[in-house]
Length: 213
Image (cartoon, rainbow, N blue to C red; front, top):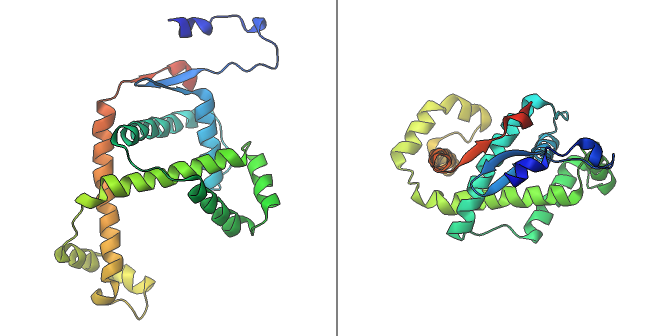
């Protein structure tokens, strides 16, 4: 109740340059604030190279992403899964700078400024993405078994597409390693999504609807 009461203090009681953050969602014992949602939107749109959109209409999908992330964070913490290192995040940042900004730090900085982001925030996001990928590999990939029949079925279903993408190298024998990797990825994603849905059901999630208006 004390947290809720804080938002009843008249705005005039604060200096004009103070921004009052609001709680948007409570996930277990964690809190997602409006500032967290806005930062997630800025980072997602920056990485997807989409126009910046912070409107109320996109807050809910961003909040859902952050809920999923908190559920994953809880599992990583309780299960002792490996986390990506600062060095790995820095290497990913340098690849992004090279691929999209011609290895020119000034161009990257200018793009970050347009989205209201800092390099540290971007690096943290990249570290988190690598950590989630590692979690998927450690938590779900060991349980996936791709049989020869699975490979054959995928090849038969996607043969025309595979032939277009791999001219001259589209036999089943040539594409088997690639197909096995693709099928493994699909199965990992399926298992992960099923786990996430169950984990969310077990988690107390409380929305503060006023934050999405």
